[in-house]
Length: 164
Image (tube, rainbow, N blue to C red; front, side, top):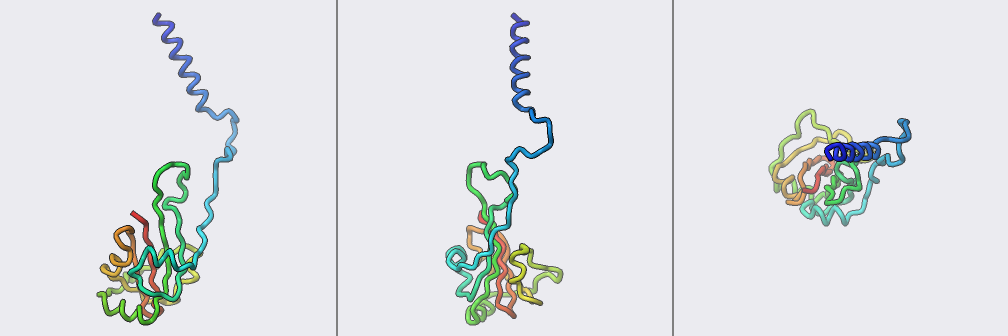
């Protein structure tokens, strides 16, 4: 009886291991590998206005949204975190109000907007970036975590957030 159980266990183990092995014997991709292309740069206003109403009125926006951890398996069920990077140019009157309403500090001297290559052409040249903890908190709302910086010279807000 013991030999029969040991034989069945050994057979089950061999079948299980055989199912895990690669029967092709080569290192070629199985066809399941995918490449991730960058998210398109968007200029539509409504998604930004809807998500970040405290930005106020703005002239233009260039932004991208992508699933956080874009290289991960997309077949895993469940909610997906979305990362948003945006450059939003405020209207002059909105900029003036924003500068008055918040306490601003210079961005760290070595700070550079961590933008995708696709958004970088829309970054103002030679910006003097500032940060306000309260502005960031107000703009990103309770749904998002991340940062917001403002270049007062161009009226551009850099926003990089992920929904929580």
